Image (cartoon, rainbow, N blue to C red; front, side, top):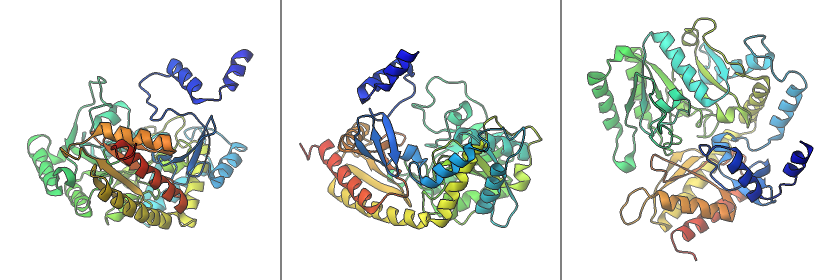
Length: 438
């Protein structure tokens, strides 16, 4: 064992570790970039060879407050000396209760709200569905094309993309129905989507059998597609009319990413339930469901929980994250960064014909890459752009049903100079991928 440990400690380049990864980790877990990260701070990471990269992925939207924020590190370190884990179903601890109070106020304001905590976004989604079904005594759930709600079996069923998520993993849970999501670039209007909902009620499932409609206010993995205010308000009216729970999946959009604490706040609505995860923990795994108290109390005692749900370290990190978001002007910063990034991406769209669209909300922005001759999604070119950016020191990832959208999820603590550097690299990557730079 000592020899093995010594050998592991001698790894100092990416290739050796990636070879070990190939031998030890199944191929189903994809790593987007051929790098092994040793340390990170703010919006920067360094691999085991000492190379620096700008991280504009942020753990896929997990690090809105940046890597290793001192406030998060200090909070977790302090909690580690008190209680690391106890399981809330056995004994309560202050952090869980305080975090619930904070989120209830942030989401519900003066209305009575309650929160329950889990470990992953998929767990939060599954439990939101359980709560909605318990409240309504109905089973039907409506989700959207292009949605992403997790990799568990129910999460994959709700997810509106066939590959790579569904593969041959079926049969899938029943009573899940699907609607188109507004996508102006590809000719899908909000009116089309609302008509599809009427048709769904008429021919597939009556509204009195629907427990919930679940929607990402801005689709994440589906391509950074924002739902418009009129569309979200129409869904709210329809769900209230029929006693259907409206669930907003804020796993990726929450905690300042769109310029407000939660994306639903852009639309002048209040959902019945929201799911939270990712940036809530500032790098630690914690998720939750926040909702109206009467709805949250629908499951009987014992119906909700999980061994690690609301882990004490995760709660401590989350409380530090909320302090940072509320007191460090990060929401203002998100809007400033979003305006700068949007303006620069628009300039690049004028320069490169392959950029078919610039879209998003706040600092949650993306560009859709199209074949400039056919106008069709170009996944191959998208990958070339990502690879070129990585080679120049910028980490980005793709999304979209056709995997032809480059998304930007940089931390909200990104500096102006880091943003300028990233966009300069992105310009070079576009030029190289399109043949405009040798």
